[in-house]
Length: 158
Length: 149
Image (tube, rainbow over all chains, first blue to last red; front, side, top):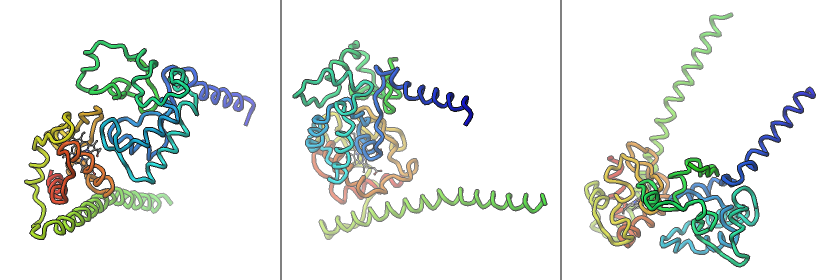
């Protein structure tokens, strides 16, 4: 490689690494595990694990039989795999992107289950009722209804 | 020599096209066989539950699909609450807002081909709509109906 090529490559890789960091307030590491994507994504968007601390994901996976009122139980081997992925990438483990902001509001002993109750969420979603009543929204946890790139970890305002 | 090599590439292009055309057909055949296997297992279960079992009915499946059972979650009185009245149309989960791909086999040939997925979804959806598990007869009727849509 010529010296030019080397410095170009360095500059490019710096850009790539800096990309998400620059947008820390509207980016969170996306789900990269196929099974987690498929199983959680059956009924709702597969939320990024960075929005909750590891102990919350433990509680979530312990409570699948009554998952916000629904029976969301799955085969034990699948549940184990998903639990390991979610806890390893939880907000208090990765501390990247929006996970930092969300974790700031979680008490040391808190075990939140609803991402939509985090003050970081509420701060950004103080809308008129008519916005929540749009037919494509249905519920506050339906991120992609408005944030079209939510599944890829981007929550830019629109 | 330009002529033979041109022929050769035409041949391999044709072969490639042939493969590309054949592949989806055999994938559909596989899907149909997988769906048939699921129906066979359900038929066996239905016969064990009722010796008078006489096969599955698309008409009964349609009734299951369209009836307002209102036995489970109040947001989902019927299957159509999420899958819509038209099985060939996109649905939307009435609880989470998530879009659902059409359930008609004509639109989605891979429907009802993964036994785990089918079992899991019947368990969840029948509980949400009827407030109880569906019987093997009901499950077979439903798949039979959707296979014709």
